Length: 221
Image (cartoon, one colour):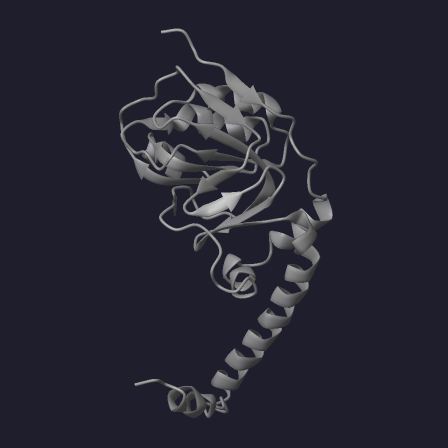
């Protein structure tokens, strides 16, 4: 079958190395708590050895079970980027496996996020190269297209724009616009300080639990 065309757009500017380095040390949960707790992926799992994921999104939209657009999208990726693949949540055929994830690592990608299936999981689990996916299937991909590169996509219920910051750890994934980074870093840092103070109070037996009374008092039933 002749391959269908792939719509291609230039990659967005990369986020600064300073912001990337700072976010690498912030748990996703702290960022999520400061984004109204209603952002992030649902249903995608990490399949790599624990390691943080932070980078600029290069997005791919592909038909479920087909990886032609993914193969082309590597040409749009720079060291430090995260390839974010919307395969429609389809898990009937894997769209990447050990070889393509290995290639992503060799060209300096920060990781790959796939709303679809992967394979060669035993191999991927041995590496710290971040790979998130919806599921696993040994059946390999088709290479017929169609697809699009650097368009808005949805992965795990989360919309990702080309150029968004993508952050991930063992708790899950978040994406947000780069102009939100400074504020989120500041708020997450303040929350981490508060949480550390709470844990110190617990160690010393002086944790003030009176806030529970106020929470219980406002319960509707």
